[in-house]
Length: 164
Image (cartoon, rainbow, N blue to C red; front, side):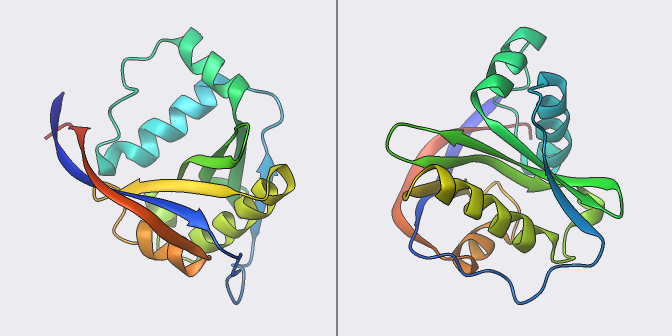
């Protein structure tokens, strides 16, 4: 794994701005039973295009431990898994730890709807909601967060893993 300087944006929610409409056939479900292989599947498949490799070496036990620390929400498009969100409840805030869509479902409005649902759940846990994204993430990630009501509170350059 190569670690190169990467621009990272830290964001905090001002006020939820939901999308104008939700795509038809979309269902967002809480994966109430923590199951590490599910989280690993989404991390690997969503992150494949965005150099998410920092957790590539995690074993099954570590994935299970992570799944037990977060809430995992899965978006289904017409019954097919389309994307996911992981919410990490922390003492003073709820953090969207990971969020993304599988390749065939990008650009269909699912991300905005999933993000709005994720934010609503975060607001049930805390009045402070945070997320971070970086230049390695999808090309619409930062705009999607800002469109849903997040604002950048910090920008910095960090060493992040890249597979290329």
